[in-house]
Amino acid sequence: MLNVNPQTVCFIIARAKEFQSAETPFASDDVSLQDSEWLDELQQEYASDTYYQEVKAVIDDLEPDQQVTLIALMWLGRGDYDVEDWDGAYADAEDGLTLQTADYLMATPLVANYLEEGLTLLGYACEE
Image 1 (cartoon, rainbow, N blue to C red):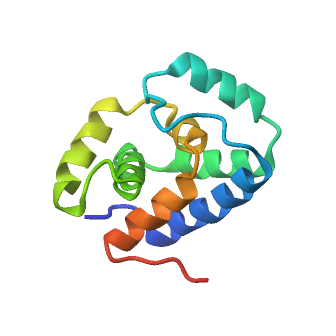
Image 2 (cartoon, helix red, strand yellow):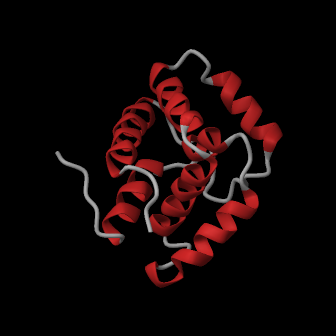
């Protein structure tokens, strides 16, 4: 079910928590994967933020199917889908995949919490 290393997801969660603890939420949960203009502005605004760039580099280095998994995992943790509809979440994320996956994820308030909850729902956990 999970085609990305859980430790990679945990690294993203840890860095996203650091980033978002220093920043106020800047998008609503309904920002679309297709909203490239808004995501471009976001990328420019945080070009010098170390945590943002670190997460972006890790996500950008993932294979497309692994990026799809991250999006579906975030949606699962946010409650948009349940575990029984994992395949639907994955298919919808695959349909909307763009080159701005990292920006989309980092623009989502509470993304770290959602990813962590998604991992938990799938039976994984980050070590403290």
